[in-house]
Image (cartoon, rainbow, N blue to C red; front, side, top):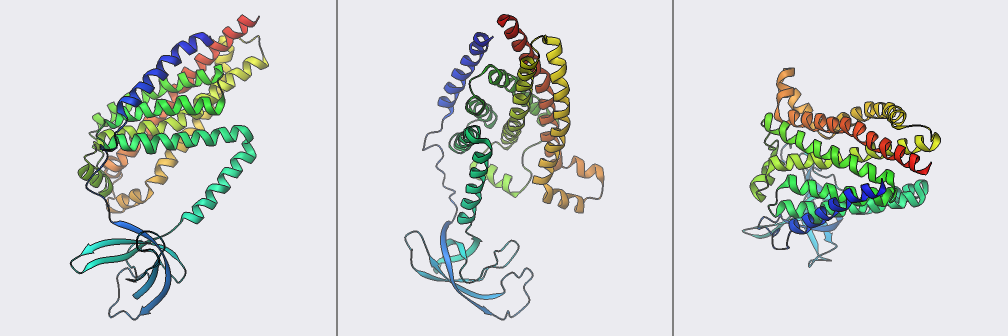
Length: 371
């Protein structure tokens, strides 16, 4: 069984590596002429508030100016006077705050404005707490999980995003990246065992089915991927295929949940076979399937809530502007999230019997060989 598994995994790994080399973007491919305004880190030295001549519609800091001291870049150490920020989402600033400036050009020279707070220190503290907690609980397995997380971020940041910006097909990039993440992270986190190999095969089959179903659903529902100002700006400015990007997001988003389900099913079958070596294929498959049904029942609710939480502001806005339930559900934004949830769920449902059958077959054959 190990030889059969290696014979299947090795070609997949070679094809994935070759595809990554072929799709890997060159440095010149991702260079664009649409760079945003320069952002500068600064500290608020003083705040001078004045009475507003008229009431502001979205007042946050009131009228007046602030003096900030630049802490990085060519203008480090300079003091700059900027207007107090106001409007929806404007940061509320006070003396001593660490803020981010934006620099723009106008006919009178350079203009500066405060656009956000700096959060690097707080984020580093949160990241340190996260890492220490994972290592304290998981020990070496937790350290391996963190290494797998680093690999995932590396693939997404250095391969997926640059390749899509370079004009490569987003769905193809997502499939190759998901295969690379799956092969690397699963073996790195769970070791080079037969159970891990079975989980990899189950994930690959389910992920392929998820990609196929997502392509059919997006085409049948005529989803374009253009749902808000951000997606419109991305499509028009950088020429990204937004429908392909939607499919890529569904595939990559499904991978994380598929890993959980396939590894759980594979390990469950292995433990059942170890606990009762007399179990054959049918007994192993039946017992592990009952575990899988309970797992799927809870994961489905997790998927729906995750997508609903990420799009809650848009959901509220659509419901407020459209009192009809049918109009809300068929709106492209909501339909897009429904497709994400439904396709991911179908992929998960397929993952349980596929992975359980592969694991039961390998475990029963391994037990017979051992006897």
